[in-house]
Image (cartoon, rainbow over all chains, first blue to last red; front, side, top):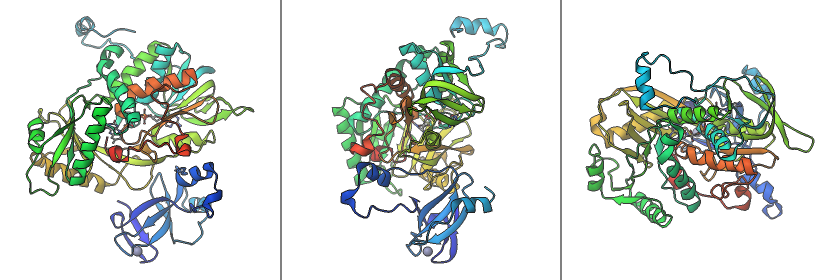
Length: 101
Length: 417
Ligand SMILES: Cc1cc2nc3c(=O)[nH]c(=O)nc-3n(C[C@H](O)[C@H](O)[C@H](O)COP(=O)(O)OP(=O)(O)OC[C@H]3O[C@@H](n4cnc5c(N)ncnc54)[C@H](O)[C@@H]3O)c2cc1C
Ligand SMILES: [Zn+2]
């Protein structure tokens, strides 16, 4: 069981209070009419599925209910950062170096 | 190859079974192969076996980063069934069921396929409707599946608790009688021994670190822990690691990799006659021939390559097992482990050519590919040998995510097998 930190409630809670919603920072196409089939595939189905440092969305579903983002190492499952939705993605390589991964 | 027989067994008894000999060689890689398969799980080994057997392509290597059968093949709960919803899936999984039936004879290796019946429980009105829809769809597609009342379910599986006052009472069940279990290790070993005998090189402890492509974009070979190996064709059969391997060739995949767990109890005398699964409360149980109860749990909610799942996931499954089978409450659990399963958006596998000439991929089996091992290897070998899919795997392309012709098995395979 992971311990997850909610940047809105500013508390650390067991993973079962949260729901993980996959890769973060995937923007919905601004103008759907002009999007090619390839770009729809990319948006809807293709994921980095990184073995290593990964930014993903979490939702504090049994708490404040809000979405936020987290950076996690997908081999050790250690969290390296938590930040609010709308904030830019931290530099993953730097985070990985700091954590010695 | 020394064929196994009753006579051999008797002969070897005189030397206390100490002279059976190796089942396959441990060769060093050659400089070049016609086909290189990445991943010596059941699917990769079966592919190599059928390439040699049915297509006469014997200059083949199977490269494995660990030991053969040490991935999901050696970690699953061994459930075999074919009652999926769509006709495309029915054809694929039924093809496998057909091959399972003669597999021990075909491989001269006891894979212990036991058609003891797979019973899938319904606990809610919605479950009942979904199960009956499945049963009707299956009957139309020529796939065995039948409906049981709670009393009939208890007749088939006496340990089942059908009391009305439990948290998720049993409202009925779908039974596939040809479903059952098989010995997972034996499947990998049997295919390995058969393939090796026809000249396939199985190279263990050989991590693939790169896929080289020529100026025209076509595959040229693979970089490995044992150096560069030239190959005309490369088949990727790497389950949870498929994204990582396909990245080496620059092909992005519609996959996410999740930990999935199983556990076994201490061995006891025969106490459980069939396989029981419940998708709604995430529990699957059968008894191995060694006597252990084999229990399958759900996936974690986040992607991971850790090969360990959260303990709360197994606890949840044990809760369900204890309620459905109260007389197992005092059993002790012996071992618990995880595997990394590669899940597609529509929960159906990908057995396909790729945008890269000479590169093929067999993946996306997620939580439920063991049952398909013989059929998957059979049609994937065809795809590689002929450079075009077999009729049965033709719908299972990567392209379906672009054309929109998804094969949505989420209801059948969300977590279940
Ligand atoms: C706990 C659990 C329970 C399951 N229960 C069932 C069940 O009851 N019924 C069912 O039908 N299915 C079940 N499954 C799913 C089933 O196990 C898989 O779908 C199936 O075994 C996949 O076989 P495979 O040969 O494709 O993969 P694997 O057996 O995982 O083989 C892939 C191989 O590729 C190797 N590899 C990866 N990357 C590299 C590299 N870079 N270089 C070299 N080698 C590499 C790996 O080491 C591995 O050995 C379960 C899975 C798990 C984890
Ligand atoms: Zn919160």
